[in-house]
Image (cartoon, rainbow, N blue to C red; front, side, top):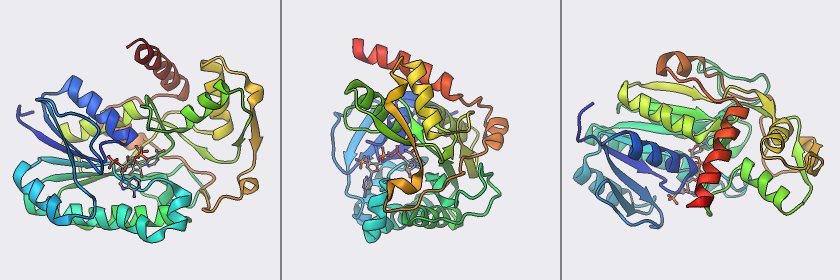
Length: 305
Ligand SMILES: NC(=O)c1ccc[n+]([C@@H]2O[C@H](COP(=O)([O-])OP(=O)(O)OC[C@H]3O[C@@H](n4cnc5c(N)ncnc54)[C@H](OP(=O)(O)O)[C@@H]3O)[C@@H](O)[C@H]2O)c1
């Protein structure tokens, strides 16, 4: 691939963006332009960090007309599922309208838009789901994300939608995921209720980053389901975390989703079939054991730095 490829990464503080930035910095010579609501990092020769409010369409247009990214990777989203139910307008702006606006800008500057979406576009009645299954969201988060991916897929800009589920990996102080919640609870010797009726295939952020890189290298368009190689429920996932990190398994109490009385409904039998991504992108996705062992090593290195 050419030397001076420009990649814009939006939602720079997200977990998935962190993994993408880390991989692309190590394995490519591409120029990275990383965008966030708030600026935390100092720019380097390779990575320009910028803050642009998501609502300022004019600023995004001006910025991209100047930078001329070849690829725009959008990881930004309102990802708190219950908050989306309570604050529907905010969810619509972040998850649907912003994606639509980005696809318009991508068309004008002839950039390829890679947009992240979710298994929550499905109802969880009969997962795991393939790219050919019909979405039917049961939460406002799922509805707003489906509207966002439809806006991207229907636009005339070159586009790819990556759907993923239950993302975990190396995090910083400000990021949160399921594995961190389990580890922090165990650290505090606190018992937690973990649902045993929500099924998914947890996805390592490093695998998602590799998928994004391969999509760029192979110039792939359309929908890709990216998920790990273990289909399990959340309690089984917590038990595997306990095994790999030597935690007290009795801290994790199985519970049913309905007993949590959450604001938004969750898809129960979900998960994403990764066959297309495996064959077309040439990626062997991690099982939860492989992903957690890798994460344990990365955390060890992080603690020594
Ligand atoms: N985590 C999962 O398990 C999961 C599962 C399925 C799909 N996904 C999708 O994958 C993408 C990235 O997920 P992630 O878990 O890496 O994201 P995350 O860590 O929750 O971060 C989301 C980022 O979006 C930006 N943002 C824009 N509007 C926002 C708003 N109204 N409220 C909060 N944040 C807002 C913020 O970035 P800045 O601070 O940089 O502006 C924030 O750091 C999203 O599209 C999500 O829908 C995630």
